[in-house]
Amino acid sequence: MATKQSLFAAAAAAACILVLLPSASSLTTSFEYCDKGKEYPVKVSAVKMLPDLVIGGYPNFFTIYASTDKTIITEGKLFSAITCETFHVHSEAEDICTLTSCPATADFQVSHQLDMPSTDPNGPYTIRFVMLGEKDEELSCISLSYNLTGGIARALDLTSLFTA
Image (cartoon, rainbow, N blue to C red):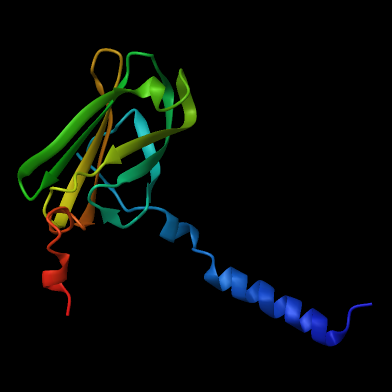
């Protein structure tokens, strides 16, 4: 039979675990629709970016949680474009059906990996994800911001100059 002390210890351990677990809101990354007044056929409910600290030279994984009443055909694309201030840094397009189950209807997830170049300078960046349909019609467009760390300073091994 459990003693009061063992029950108290178990309850305290459970409370510590709950405090240490990240909340649902900390697991998602804030985003904005590209055109706030537009009604997109694909609605994005959340975006996860892992890790949430972007380090140049290492991959980042994005999961876009979305829903639609439209069927995304196999010719759909996910276009991603990265900018720093107003300068274009990187862009790519992938068949959306390699990133999610197709046909994508109702609630679905799009998982995408981006390799952040180690030669890019540290600082604020914006990434734009555009979902395009069969005839390149825009199904959704979101943008999110992040800070790149470990970019060109790491690539040139200048990090010791910036540490005490």
